[in-house]
Image 1 (cartoon, rainbow, N blue to C red):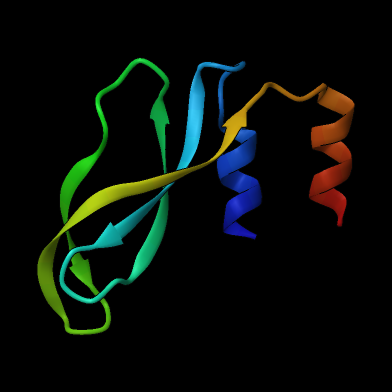
Image 2 (spheres, rainbow, N blue to C red; image 1 turned 90 degrees about the horizontal axis):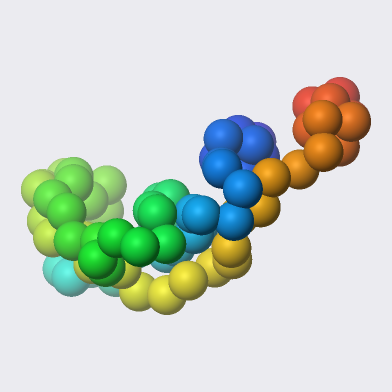
Length: 78
């Protein structure tokens, strides 16, 4: 459900959905970044150890493109 919200929030072809990995435990989360930005590095609480750790961009999942209004509307119904 959250992934569909992320995809709907993206601007046309200028953003990437990426996977970020905790440097302590390997826990992964997804974030959106602009195509022209540097690779992401940020501090966030790792739920596996309940401590703030460094997350680094691991890999690109997909390029986010603007959907047609009808497709967005139908995806919210399901």
